[in-house]
Image 1 (spheres, rainbow, N blue to C red):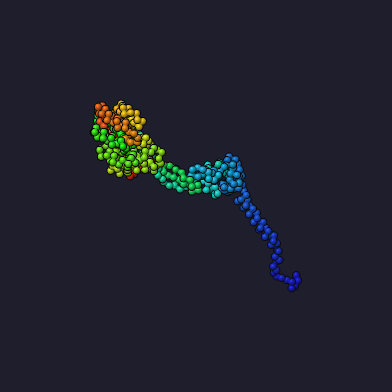
Image 2 (tube, rainbow, N blue to C red):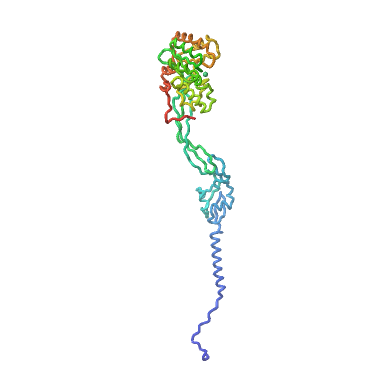
Length: 411
Ligand code: NI
């Protein structure tokens, strides 16, 4: 041991490690860990079953991604449909139908539902979906139906509105009646032949198309014979022959309307039809002081459509049982024979006091009245026939019908 070189203690020289190598080791370890993590969390595949076929998928992959990576396994998407089932967007419905482990997966979970080892998926075609829509309530008009057969038509049941649910597509703007939520009540028009029930015999003579220059002579005959008839005046003739129109009413006959201008009513639109009826009533009221509700439609043409459009304006539409065909001018005897030969209790006979040369009606009338009386008939108005029958509603017989407030017309 050398003096002065005696170090009682000396720190042993520190082993000089390589810092770079240590860092590399740590980094290496980290890389391995990350790699394992990546493999574990991202790249590791697990077996699943899709449409009965084994498949390895990255664990936790979403259903959406799985479909996207595999072309939806051949499933076709549904379409986006409008409220009336028109295609708005091809393929705009659900992309596919996916059943995971026996339970259908809602479409809004496709993006969040992960697929894990052992899952079983069934992927089939998507379904159509419908656009968003607004729901509103609208009125359903009643229909009109005819009931029975006979010369006199009247409303036996008024129509009442129903309700329906209507869907309006927010994209398409289409409107669709979805369902009736309240059924309407149909308007019913009854057709009935009057049949007086008191054991006596009655008939009604009726005169159309007047007043005219022949009306005065016919009124004279009726007055002389002491019988009453029913006159279906045209509105424009009532205006032109106002005194005769008033005389019909004043002498106790039944004054009714043949509408205004003798148009074929089924050829008129709704407004034209209503105007033909109401303007005639206006003119007859102007001339006579009373407003008729009873009509006889020209040519008898008044279908359920006309009832549906104007049933609130009239009490009844009166046709006929015996047509004299007087307008063909078959001779007074032929007119007499047609009425008398076809007479029966309750019959309504059609003649004319206007619209042409009615001299044969004037000539035939006294014989018709005399022969019917001889056969035991009483001649009455159509209103009286209805009253004697007993089955007609009182307001129809009286000519005072008003549509109830809660009723609506079909059109
Ligand atoms: Ni006529």
